Image (tube, rainbow, N blue to C red; front, side, top):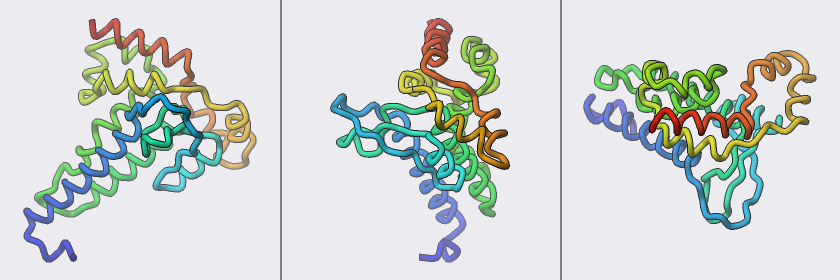
Length: 197
């Protein structure tokens, strides 16, 4: 069915519903804790080339066979890759020339703000300070942030070495990547819990 043939209001509704569906599924995949059965390793892959490159360079999630797409563990490369995918989705939404669908990119704001906050180099200052956190990330759900932080594992050393030694942009990408590991995630969880009580 061609969306151009739809009335403008219906066309906008289809775009909003589609983007909300994509956002909901990406968010659910990241936040799903899954059952505690024995996990199997799976590579994270994004919808763009950066997601695939990050997956090839060591980003990983661990999925439970019965949980479908929900991840049990995630590292900074996987979060960075997902963030790039969400930025591409927001770019697509902004390019949709629909008068009735202005602000379509805001559908992805909760997930993007969650990823931005977790990957923020000043996360320890931002997440522990309620006014700053609210100003920078007004749609951040602290419970969601804690859920993801509980799943964080470090980026494998071999993946970091591979990124730094690869020619071209690889070394710069490794330098830009936040060093979010299990220890830092635990500290951020404590900050979130203390600021919300």
